[in-house]
Length: 149
Image (cartoon, rainbow, N blue to C red; front, side, top):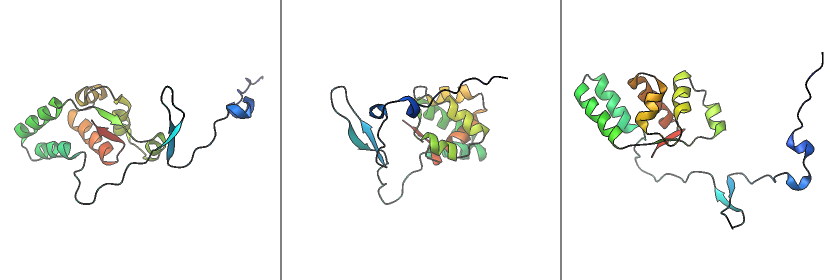
């Protein structure tokens, strides 16, 4: 039985000049069309002290209205939320997403986010019930893996 040949890793075939140099922790290299690489911070700035509104607060309010039996209020809040044409964007790194141990619902919602589709389109693409999709999105927002723009 013959085994297929293993492909060589880039560091096994590349010359030392073509191997990227390691970067300093917390910094990424950026460059424009005609400018050399410069280092830019990759960490989020510290939050100002005081109370901050959770990014999922509007959605949590909508879910609370549904749980409290205020379906007309919830429907109005849902329409207001969709009228804002918010676009969910993934901001968590691949490593933080992998370490987050996402369940099926969270993974499904995360996989439908393409940073171009509106919140309504993402929730429709998941094929989850609207409340399940919104709850999953809230959890992703609270874990800071997704933001709404």
